[in-house]
Length: 335
Ligand SMILES: *Cc1c(COP(=O)(O)O)cnc(C)c1O
Image (cartoon, rainbow, N blue to C red; front, top):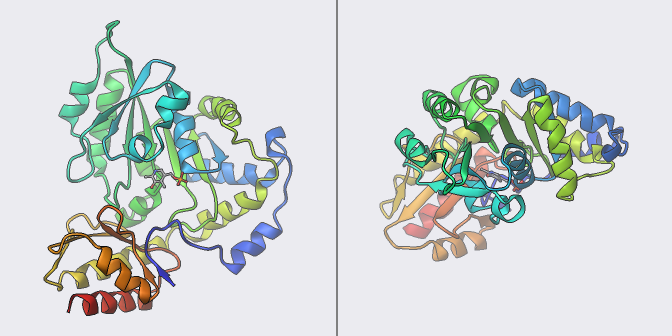
């Protein structure tokens, strides 16, 4: 099976499974799991933050961060298409009593400084308290420019807001830019990172931030039902991927670039090459939706995400050969 639906579909390798099987464990709710602690220390070190906390998913680490930064009746500024707003079941509002202030995303994935400024509320009893700016990087595979991040987070700070980064795929951005991930994360008060996307761990995310923030995060994680016991079994895979699978994200970016480039030769397809920064290829078709293409590919054991637009995502389990097979199958369909 060539599964291009998402980079969440990777399976743990034999080596990773061995590391997991041998992991030293304890009850992490009691603070006794040495492997979880090791992962948290490694994540904090790599991101240049004081501390980190391991959790079950990126949805959970984002929600924990929002609940740490915002009180009941506060609001966070966030992109309309951002994961924390659109794809997390409204958790901030439902579970955190935090009001989202969604703002249109520009074509490059950013939220304009003008719109950020216009959305920050003055201190007035009519308004929710603007408390936090939440950015996402990468977003739809796009990398936010560093100078934009600096300007947006400075603008927020100047108005008394905190900054959170949904960095589910922030390592993709760092590797593509050829910089240390610290250079992206340093503008934020907290960052959530998925270990289970392109990095290839089976489960888990980390939230990194100040010592105080992470201490409070422990309380919210427990309340959300996210206190896990011998979690070192899965944390071991997290350590493994942070140590071994970061630089190889390059291969995914190269595969995606090649896939996107080749598909531009098909007249019925429109490929967004300008924003093909990392591991995701988005397609538009003059023939409308992608149901027929998706069915055709499925018969050839190739899966794509055709729910909204067509999205093809490169990852650890997709080889150069798989890309060539996919290109041939798509060309055949349109021929
Ligand atoms: C996947 C993802 C998340 C959440 O991750 P889960 O582990 O699936 O809950 C958050 N933000 C972005 C941008 C993501 O792609």
